[in-house]
Image (cartoon, rainbow, N blue to C red; front, side):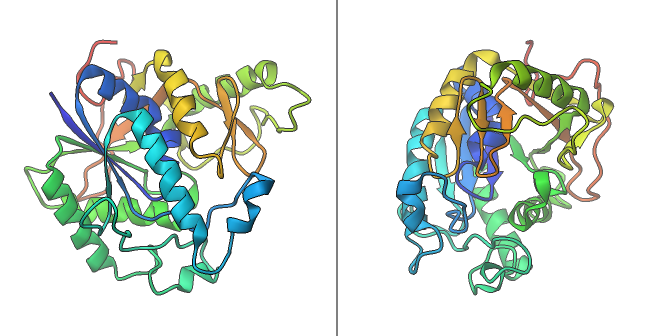
Length: 288
């Protein structure tokens, strides 16, 4: 049995970015853990009936999103942790930073604005306590550039650097050809009257979308998508879930394709480790 740790910045990231790998490894009988670093206090609320939670005094959205995450975690079947919390009921040490330049970024508990050495030491101690064989987090761009995602990447790297016995570190990356295929799929599967935009193959792609040969590992398991959808429905303030697709507050549809790409990262140098992009084994050597 392999122990895997998925490290994320906010509630819902675990299911959106790595839900396929999480569910795949839970089904395999592996020991799967998720570490969340904030409660997503700056999230943009989608349902009108919950709009009063967004930006309100005393952060009521934090408590609501904690409940959403608890529901998603119960579906995923993982052991969950908050960074800096002694018990699951404690508040995480850090708050959602929002984007650079926002008022939230200047908050005294802002995750991305806090003392980096303190964050890295908390990360190191937490990883050491969980003692995983594999750690998974964002690429150096944080997937799409969010400062909290980048802080997670940097802190995980610092926690594992210069340690020859450190667990294998994977970062999330998506082959460009997959995105082109997924956008074509969305065109024929998202109802035209649903009110969600479908990006074209030529529209801009996230920084984590890379040339196919850069992605050396993959978890491909379409059978887990219904469970991923079930988990995402618990994150109702942030995500609208369709049949095989989802949309965030930007009203842009994205596919739930049942596949996720990864590459091994050297935590000391920050370089991707060369691998076999033609074969693309899983996070754990696992015939697919």
